[in-house]
Length: 240
Image 1 (cartoon, rainbow, N blue to C red):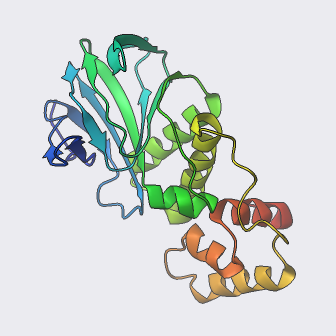
Image 2: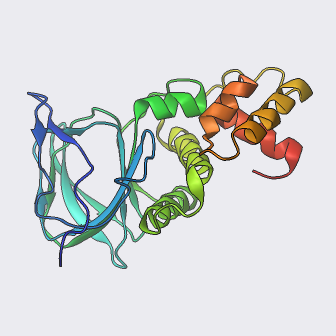
Image 3: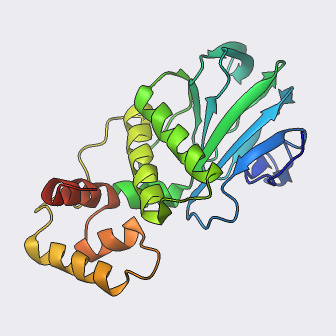
């Protein structure tokens, strides 16, 4: 099988910080490279075996098992290796900068989503502290990942606002699942979206209708976090 897309996941050696081509043997099937997504990258690939030692990723690294069968592998914990099994659609969450060591001895069909720390802060209006999670089975998170992978495979036919909405929803879901403590409400949420701010947003959309619209830019007009703006806009307008 040929490799149609180059690697977009930036692995680093946790000790030295130097880049490592950790997936050089993988067959890359889908990539968001060249789509212009900001703070977000996705990739689909297959690899027969994968052995890593003390690697980190630039961003919050979320992997899903796309195979129809469970995927088994080993990961190094504080007291030696432990076994993990990802069910079909099961997810592994690795926070930004968190070192990991894996031993994968069987064929792996995976999807990966990498969200930058800045995207998480921009989406939520705060900086949640995520923890590593294995064997996550969450229908909402799985659906969001699959939608992002499908959008990349189709070369983003629904535009940047659609991807921004998905990434914001995914940032929120990740925080609910993997944060060290539940988020204490959403920053900048006081007062909601006033009529004056809503009109500013609408005026901005009309003035830039011929350009790619980013959810973060609209939220800036409303002076709200991306998550809170998206929720308030949908509540008031009846559409996302």
